[in-house]
Image (cartoon, rainbow, N blue to C red; front, side, top):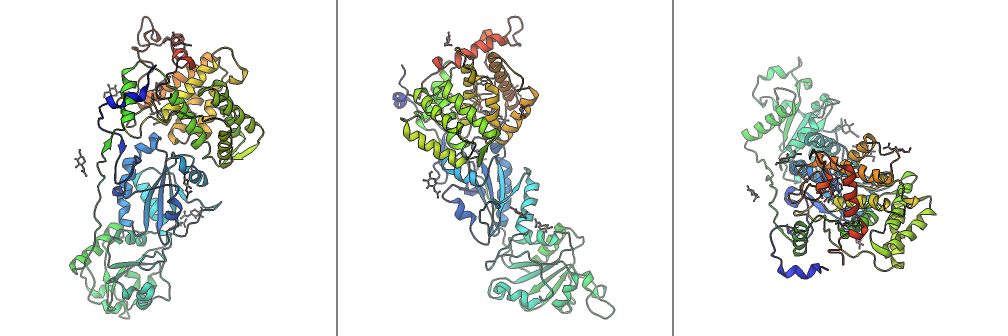
Length: 570
Ligand SMILES: Cc1cc2nc3c(=O)[nH]c(=O)nc-3n(C[C@H](O)[C@H](O)[C@H](O)COP(=O)(O)OP(=O)(O)OC[C@H]3O[C@@H](n4cnc5c(N)ncnc54)[C@H](O)[C@@H]3O)c2cc1C
Ligand SMILES: *[C@@H]1O[C@H](CO)[C@@H](O)[C@H](O)[C@H]1NC(C)=O
Ligand SMILES: *[C@@H]1O[C@H](CO)[C@@H](O)[C@H](O)[C@H]1NC(C)=O
Ligand SMILES: *[C@@H]1O[C@H](CO)[C@@H](O)[C@H](O)[C@H]1NC(C)=O
Ligand SMILES: *[C@@H]1O[C@H](CO)[C@@H](O)[C@H](O)[C@H]1NC(C)=O
Ligand SMILES: *[C@@H]1O[C@H](CO)[C@@H](O)[C@H](O)[C@H]1NC(C)=O
Ligand SMILES: *[C@@H]1O[C@H](CO)[C@@H](O)[C@H](O)[C@H]1NC(C)=O
Ligand SMILES: *[C@@H]1O[C@H](CO)[C@@H](O)[C@H](O)[C@H]1NC(C)=O
């Protein structure tokens, strides 16, 4: 019998593991240097209620491969958004943390990454959980946010406004508004934005980095007449013959004016962009300031930090144990999968009823019968199953309470804390999704083990239900549902055929993800099992074909409850 954690002192502590970045003890995909702040259940409400400010939150599940692949794009976006930091703060929130479950349920986060905008006066309610975008590309998300930010209100002093000026406005009213004369503002830019255009909004967003300039927008060119443009005669930039700008009566023709700058002393200057494009508007405005020696403040560009990791001793020890031993399945992983399902994934669902309740009952019933975590687990899941059978509808919160209540009635269920077979050599990889596969395979194998119980018929349907209703990994779910349909998960299968179906489906996923950025180099995505682990799983004549009977036999051996390794489990 191996006593795993005695070995710790012998282990040479190598590189890598828990991130020690900027005072955070938990590994995090983002940091303040990326212009992304990490929120948790204690900080989220406060952050979202900050007045006069938009908030952009990416809800993630740390285990979701899609969230990880999205990191470079989101970092680019966040760094770009640093320019708008007067208007918008960028956050990330991890729904895979147990303390965050309630928040993710309240905000109805099912698939991750989920990206939401929250406006200045946001208060969560039944009807308001923020504005979601399903876009995933850099420009699409920036455009979405420009629209959201541009429709938001910022009452606080010194904040920009996207509100159009009215016919009552003139130079005085605009300078008076928010006490601009008392501030360091030197110029007001008034821009004409034809109805349906966003050029004024975009100019505001592009110049928001300048401390001493305020941009105001009008959608009515006639309003330029309120602004005493005649004082600008001779101040057209780039320089041009003034006569081109006058009507017959000698007044400036407002129909020609698109962009005007006012100074504190009441002077106005007309700018003439060559074309009606945002780039032109920005260029002519920038040029003007440069020529007039005005200060323009560019925010510093930021760079992602090189986060250094130190490998946790226990994980290092587990890792070397797993790598040097023969292929086996570890009970600790099953326990972790179950713990996370019951305490995090299921409670995140707002309402469990109909199909999702059926799926949950099947899962719990099945956990009771297949005893992945011993006799206490069996008792617990039997009780929980009885409770669920009496309910027609429950909320994720009620489920969470019932679990807590029942856990008090039995001795401690969960023992191991670490992933073992699902240990990773780098942060954020493997872990939960790996353990979930392991649990699924275990369940198909247990269902096929005599004596057969009629309640364990249809493992695949149970797995399908769990993935569909309770697995918070967007692309995993979508891919799996597509594959389930294509591979006819609904046909009636013999128990052994179910083992084979899942094995084959998992190999398809492995092939798709081979060499993906989510691959752990120490655990490459292979077609399972390798020949070295099961030579007889391969065809006798042609070593590139499977002998599926032997594959099933092999799976039945390694996933059998009697053959599980208790390493790291006690
Ligand atoms: C239902 C589901 C769908 C997923 N879809 C996606 C997706 O679309 N995109 C994405 O990025 N990630 C997806 N994932 C996550 C991904 O499959 C892996 O879990 C993750 O990348 C971690 O990989 P891993 O190296 O730990 O091995 P995993 O693939 O998680 O496998 C876990 C363990 O199972 C054993 N095993 C491997 N293959 C087989 C097999 N064919 N039969 C039996 N046992 C096997 C091995 O011991 C392996 O270590 C999905 C996960 C699940 C549970
Ligand atoms: C956050 O979660 C922790 C752990 O579950 C809990 O103790 C704490 O009260 C929660 N805080 C808030 C503000 O919800
Ligand atoms: C944001 O969502 C709310 C509903 O939650 C909706 O009324 C509002 O129009 C949306 N705003 C924008 C700018 O999309
Ligand atoms: C947001 O503002 C734009 C103009 O900037 C407008 O066209 C659009 O309809 C607004 N959207 C919402 C939801 O209010
Ligand atoms: C991070 O590391 C890379 C390569 O190791 C290096 O090129 C880069 O300058 C580093 N960045 C910082 C901010 O230190
Ligand atoms: C399987 O059948 C059920 C019930 O007939 C149906 O709701 C479900 O969509 C089917 N699933 C697939 C993947 O075909
Ligand atoms: C993954 O990369 C390795 C080499 O880097 C290559 O040998 C292998 O064929 C690749 N696998 C896939 C599925 O692309
Ligand atoms: C456990 O595995 C061994 C091979 O490693 C096999 O001979 C044995 O039959 C397995 N036990 C069960 C119950 O499958």
